[in-house]
Length: 258
Length: 261
Image (cartoon, rainbow over all chains, first blue to last red; front, side, top):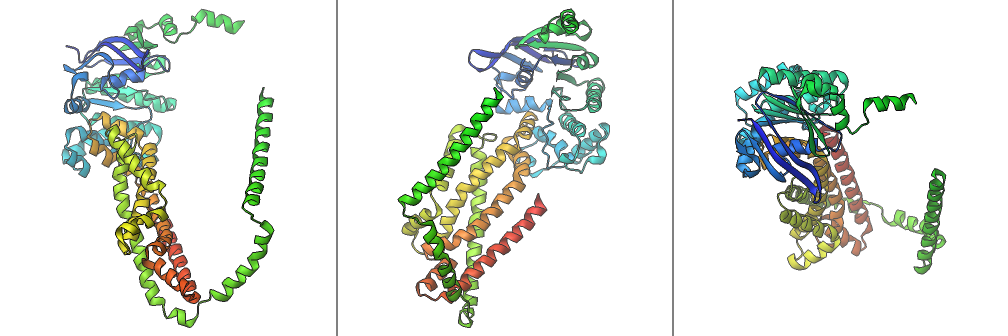
C-alpha cells in the first residue's frame, strides 16, 4: 500500500475557477518527489491539501491508510502529527529561541495543558539538540530566531519538522528565499534526511535543475493539472517547456538570434 | 502618458489645497470666528493665567490631600487598563482573522469592541453616572469600557500582522488551538501589546482627570471643587501635579518599552 494516495483531487477557491483539476498520484514510502510548475500552477494548494491545511474539495487523500478528508478534529491532529512541513518563509516564531521553536514540533503529541505550560521531557530536549547538531546549528540553540540568517532559520524549520518523527515531510518552496549556497545546504540536508531516516519528502520547487539533481521522481503541474509524472531522468526539455508553457528551445534561440 | 498622469496629480493636489482654504474660510465665516480678534485675546489670557494660577503657601498645605487623590487616580487608571487588557486579549483572539474560532464569536467580539470604542469616554462617564451613582466604581468603569474597545482593536491588528506564518506552521504540526495561541500568537505580539497597554495607561491617567470631573471621583473631582470655589492657587497646584505624574509615567513606560522590545 502506498504511503500517500491522491485520488481525483479537485479544488477551487472560487466556484468555476478550479486551481487543482483531477490530480491523481501516489507516493511510496522513502521516495523523494519534486513538484515543479510555474507560479499559480497550484503547487502550494496541492501540498496543503495533503495535510488539510486547506480543505480538500473533491476527491480523496489517503495518508498511511487514513482518509484525510474524513477525519474529525482529533483524527486530523493525529494525521498532521505524522506529517512534517517546511515553509518558504520558515514560519518560525521569530522572538523565541531556536530550541523553543524546534520543540514546537512536539505539540502534536502533547495535551493542551502540557503544551501551554511548555512541559517537555528530557528525551525530547535531548532529541532537539541532537537534531540541531545534525543540521549544524547547535551553537545557536539559545539565540532568538530573528538573529539567524535565512539558511539557518530554514534549518531550524527542518528540525521542527523532524522532531515530529514524521513519516513524510512536505516542503513548500524551501529554497525560494535563499541564496544559492544556502539553497544547496538545505537541499543536501533534505536529501540526507530522506536517505538516512527513510522519511518520504515531497518538495515544491521552482528550479527544474535542482529538482532533477535531487529528486527520484518529478511531478509537473500546469494550471492545476498533472502534465508530467515520472522518474527525474525522463524529464527532458520538451516536458519542461510544456510545463512552463514556453516555446520550444529551438524557437526561443531563433528569436534571440533574430 | 506618464506626463498626463503627473499633470493630473498636480492638478488634483492644487484643487485639494484650494478646497481646504475655502473650507477654512467658510467655517470661520459661518461660526463668526475672527482669527485676528482671537489672536488679540491671547496676551490677556496669558496675563490671567500668570496672575491667578500661582501656587502659594496656603495651597501647598493641601499637597498631602492632593497627592492622596492623585495616587488613587493613577492606580485606578492602571487597574482599569490592566483588567481591560486581559479581557481585550480574549476578545482580540476571538475577533482576529488568524485565530478566530468561528464567525459568530468573531462578530460578537468585534461588535463589543466597536460599541465600547465608538461611544466617547465622556459619554460613558455620564451614562454610567446615572446607573452607578457618584463613586469611584463609576470612574473605573468609564475608563475600563473605553480601554476595552481600544485595546481589543489594537490587539486584533497586532495578532493579524504578527503571526500568520507561525500559526500556520504550528497548525501543521498538529498543535491544538490554545497551544498555538499561547506559544505563537502571544509571544510574537507581546511586546507590541505591552506597548499598547502602557500607552493606554498614560492616556487613561490623562482622561481620569476629565472622567473624575464628570463622575465626581479622584483628582478630577478635587480639581472641579477648587475650580468652582475659585481657589485658583490650589487648581494650579493640582494641574502641576497631574502634569508631573503624566511625565513620570511616560518616562517610566519609555524605559519599560526599551527593555522589552
